Image 1 (tube, helix red, strand yellow):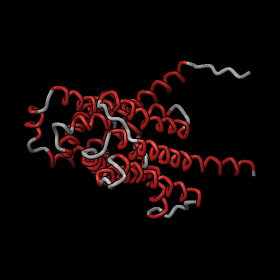
Image 2: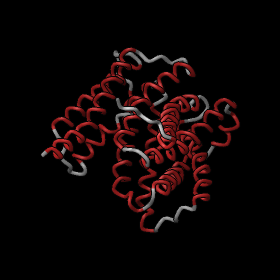
Image 3: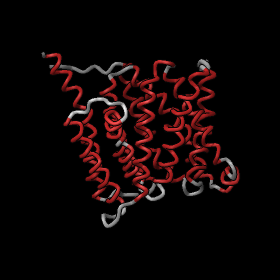
Image 4: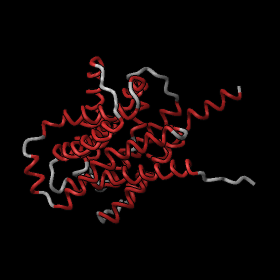
Length: 302
């Protein structure tokens, strides 16, 4: 009989993963609350001003290195896709999409990554992977249509898919340049560069801060510190101390956790079609991730 011993390091990894799940599940809820008083662009800027200040404190304590001048363009592009485009599209999309549906659509990032691998980076994509992508996008369309009723396609949902595409571009570029700096340094400069690009929304922001209720500003403070800063640090710890593929599977718990939190905090209950679409999206993404491991086992047997 095998006995699983839960050691202190394993417990820390599990707690860190649970922390990340709760933080990222809160993100669409915090956005929903923030949109009560802020425009989408101002909400993104305020969120990342808070995150930037927090990460600046961490950077000073950890004494991260200064960026090389030749790396400034790529760091700006990373900030553009990971922060600016992603969160502008996400915030605009959530004006017409429930928090639970938004969390499901955000998990479609691996589907776009497979498309980018084939179309932009000329990597081989198998028939199995194409099937998973097609099935996943079918599920995403069901979520988009089913969130507000099947009689009409909600264009706000398509904006959240644009946010997922933007995140896929960031992930692909970050993966190709990750060797230049450690993960903390990359996160800091990505957040800071993306925040600089969001400064176009600065006019009128202070007036919005004063006009917003304490509840909204507290929700925004939590949004800036936890999903936008601490969760990234915790996720870096999880990836550094565990198997990447196994750790990534924990992220499939984000949409159901977001739906549960939205039902409690926002009184938002997902429609049956959103639940069906969510199952299709998450199943296809999971199947997409399992394909490489099967190949690896076949190669090892050969």
